[in-house]
Length: 134
Image (tube, rainbow, N blue to C red; front, top):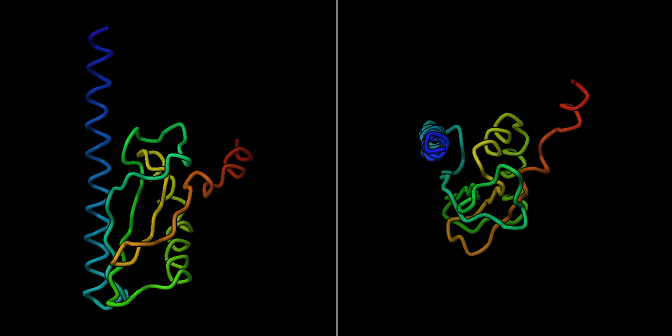
């Protein structure tokens, strides 16, 4: 019984480490793309509370939101935030990785973070293709 509990505790730290690595990797890539002029705005990922209505079987108990803040020097329009959100959601491998690591909400915010857009990640996985391939 003790070994089972211990293994569960260890898995929590491994998941936390993987989540932090993904955020760090995203931020490093975003900074490099901005510096090289490949991206017109600076993006920064962080972990947020998420939306409790978007919970799924793998959701973290707390902090289940993957937030991307966009620095442009001006307010973003809703269409611009939706465009960036759709670009993230079109990468099915990234969406699957986010879900497996316990995120359930994708949030896109401007630099002032007073408003933004959010998506339920589980709605953006091609489960029909997965089921048909079995």
